[in-house]
Amino acid sequence: MTAPRSRNAKETRAELLAAARARFAADGYERTTLRAVAADVGIDPALVIRYFGNKQELFAAAAEFTLDLPDLTGLAPEEIAGALLPRFFAVWEQDGTFLALLRAAMTSPTAAEKMREVFAAQVAPRLTAITPDHPRRRAGLLGAFVIGLATSRYVLANPGVADLSHDELTAWAEPVVRHLLTGPAPTP
Amino acid sequence: MTAPRSRNAKETRAELLAAARARFAADGYERTTLRAVAADVGIDPALVIRYFGNKQELFAAAAEFTLDLPDLTGLAPEEIAGALLPRFFAVWEQDGTFLALLRAAMTSPTAAEKMREVFAAQVAPRLTAITPDHPRRRAGLLGAFVIGLATSRYVLANPGVADLSHDELTAWAEPVVRHLLTGPAPTP
DNA sequence: GCAACAAGTCAACGAGCGGTGACTTAGGCT
DNA sequence: AGCCTAAGTCACCGCTCGTTGACTTGTTGC
Image (cartoon, rainbow over all chains, first blue to last red; front, side, top):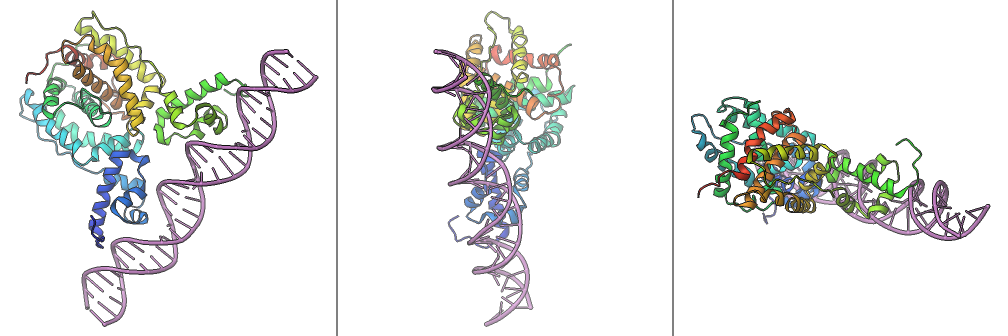
């Protein structure tokens, strides 16, 4: 950190990605400047361009990740939330990558597309594996609930959601998760 | 619209507000430029400043609104969603004011504060009036669900939520709304 | 009909942005 | 030891933004 910046491309690139993630997560896409990211690492802004080409590609690289959701098949309905929520907290509180993507997705169609892609490739398959019917709708509705919780808790800091401990939020969310995934479908 | 711009301050100001709402809703705060808003109305950008002082105050004026949620007291639990959801659709699909606020709230602390304020002043009272216990948490969780639905449907356009008709979404959301507001609290 | 005042225009500013290209310097290889 | 390549620096461009202040023009009350 305070070391005289050893000339190591791999390390510099990694630090740059971490700094970019933090900035994008905290400030969103537009308000994040290449100059600020470079300053966080202690290098010249021009080097960011040399490494990543341009701002959009830096964002794309920073928004790359895997969710690693657990396998839910074989779980009893009331165990699903307990298996899912710990990953939820880890993903949103860990390094801010997902928060950066969500913030950017609100104003950038490219980021929104990436969000849909992540959902379709990494979230939906795990959920649809255990739904009795309407897999797309159930997965979509649970995704909406999760995004709403994350927005209320980590972005808006709305009291009543942000004040809850991990255990309390898990307890409150459990019946909703269970119902959306395995409860009866509405009768038309 | 194509008229030679009659010199009427009240009217110009109203058109300006409508254009600002549309731009903020579509592009977010940072990507919305005063020049674009002014061009939409067909006037000089300097006039926007003369009317609203600066960009932040223009946004504040554009984000002002009332939700007009219906009175829920006396309703049976299964009737609540049916009374609430029509307002939900109206608010989000009407003129984009709320969408503008949500988009801006993702990156601007000022807008996030306004979001909390609207929730506390206009949403929470209506909900807490019918909750048997934990009013803040129940209202907060329902707010999270609603924000998640709006984000998935109107911002991310995530299939499975965006594809549903009003009636279908109401039917799917009804048990969740009912449970969050009136269902049993989790046992610690 | 004409002045006075408000509504609207015009040109320009200073700052900050993303991005470019030529330069300098450190460090590993022979 | 000395070079050669890659890592990092530097000065700068062109652009767009929010905002300003001086100007012009239409409308309205007398």
